[in-house]
Image: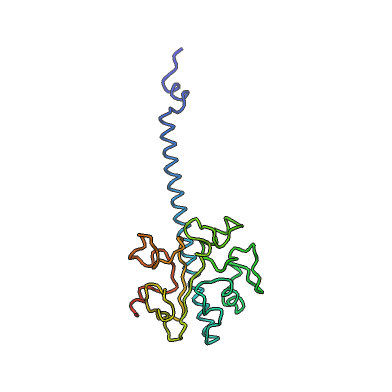
Length: 220
């Protein structure tokens, strides 16, 4: 008894070529989805870092407005380490409970930002590795310590953050602010010091700033 062609095709299933085509299509779709997810995650962290830098700058400004001078803990520091965080927590200027436990001057060893106020890339490194130290490498670049939020203050109270206060103010620009704060971005490097060829001539390349850099250059 002869079976029609349609029954033969249904009986034999997919050919090897057809299966390879399907697998290829699925692979392409998977790569697109993974790339999209990675882009979304990167964008989210950049936005978080931008917000965090702005919050830090606002907190410093609030402190200066209230106290009329910087405390000793701020004068010889340029990053949000534990000492600076404790002052901010004590003055209730930043809700650091979101980032670390520095209440009553006690650093909880299990807290995410036990090494100071870290940007999203630094916090992610601690989430992945509970035994991480300041010198632990971060997947996107730098060490945990490199991902502390940076700041520079108007130390002589002339209304500007500039090279009179610090020798490493970004690009030597005189910035009309009482404080500037920033995240070094995923690579953990300041863009004005970076050896990354992509960063050359594009400051800030991946840093996230509390100030408008283009406007600051115009005010110089």
